[in-house]
Amino acid sequence: MTIKINEDTKRQFVRDYKLPIQIVQDGYFEYYLELFEELYLSKTKYDLLVNTINRFESLEDYLNEIYRIKNAAMDFVKDRESYKRFEKDKLEEYRETSIVNKTKLYQQDHVGKTFVSIDLVKGNIQSLNYYDKDILAADTYEEFISKFTDLEYFKESKQIRQVIFGKLSPKKHKTIQLNIMGKIKDELVKAGLKDIHVLGSSPDEIVFEKKYFENYKEILEQNEIIKKFDLHVEEFKLESINEDLSVFVKRFLNKEGIEIKRCNAKFMPEVVKHLSGEPLIDKDLAFIDEGRIAHYSEPLIK
Image (cartoon, rainbow, N blue to C red; front, side, top):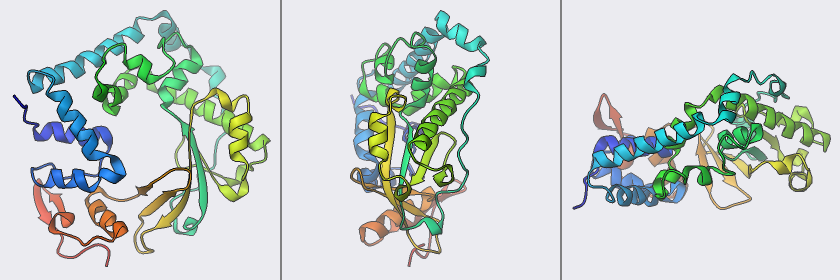
């Protein structure tokens, strides 16, 4: 028997993957999954969810399994002596960090420029392992979560990961992450990047205009301190939908694809259609107003 996926589960799926989908009612939801597949693999991920749920006898059993995984993972960590030491540690040696500038990346005078962004892959995992690898007894998140489940959807679930690490002294993770990113930034500065050229689009990310540090790849690959960390590196050109909208596009240069930034979810269908050159349909203008489906009478982008 196929289990019917209710709207609450669909909403949780949308939150889990941070998808720009407001309307989860039948007919609309399936349309948005297809529309956003190229950008977010939304249909692929939802199919994996459906297949996972149907491995259980009921939706309740599926939800109970999520609950079990979260608690098993948290209990595993909390029972370890290394974590108990971590909880008590005031982390004084990690508090000094090189602060980055707070210049905003997403502004019109940055349009047309090429940037590089560097951040930690799964920073919670790396921060705990940097402190003491015994806490998780795993080198990667996949290795850690595989102790408690063998189902791919649960391994990929950001919601499960966020809940687990959100209960394990998250402020301390952030302290260590900022310390790590400060060390990385200091190494880049030693290699020639100037402080004034470093932007801060978020507290734990380093962003700079590529023209000021063309040899960044060589430094990331060869610097002994930086090589200790698993980094997510993007090189992209910043574009704007138009000057009247504060919606930007990161067009990646070191991989395929784009990322749309600073766009309200209710406008995302229009923006995607604008970028693809496809005509709008009624569902592209739909949004939720006080719990009801409504439609804009005119498009946002003319």
